[in-house]
Length: 137
Image 1: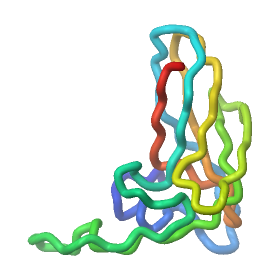
Image 2: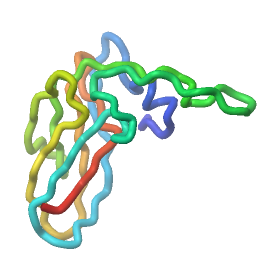
Image 3: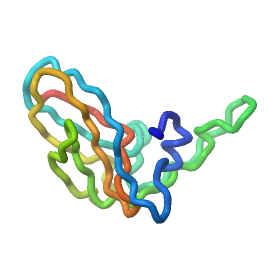
């Protein structure tokens, strides 16, 4: 299953010990203008200020019948690199430097529809990047 809420994201779902994960999800992109684009991939939202491999501390509880997702610890990952997968092909891989909050790729995108599937290479296999920021250069 694809992670669909912050409970999954904070628990580094779908990684399972002893099983090599394969990232199969994607974001559907519609590129309006052919050109060079910068793709920043992140583990945590940029406003958190947290590094890719860093644990995210739990937030305060909120009223409700169940425990809020924000009240869960965001588990650390051990990403060694990030790979930019575009339209089912691995375009490039870059290392995750110590303390890095994002990995930055630059790629040519043609006008039209694309599937963006960046992922982190972790000991358990491939973990989809939960956040991406795309800007035209």
